[in-house]
Length: 132
Image 1: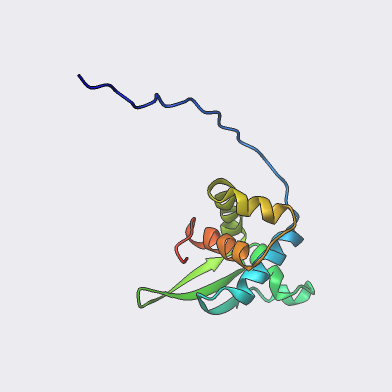
Image 2: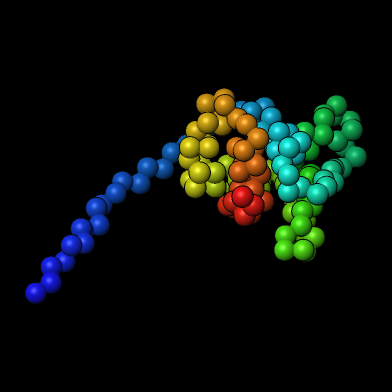
């Protein structure tokens, strides 16, 4: 006679939440990622001529509608590019909050570092971490 030692799956609560994060805080994380992520080969800033008339900096580009920073990287010997823009930033915030909560918590607590910036940028571009 065998006995079943498996415990029944415990029910869990799902807690959706909303949090407001200042653009300046996200911009600082993007800048940190672009300055220090080892897997980035190059970047290209894509913006309209109207960008010059607004007196903005390059760090504002992915936050403007119709603008992006194209990030070039190599994966398995293949050169690939992805755009970082306002849509991918919103998706990245959602991904890091749901998949990498401790990193997200450190970020919103004002304790960002290069590792968190890297995780965030990968969430923006890929939805999860693909480079360790």
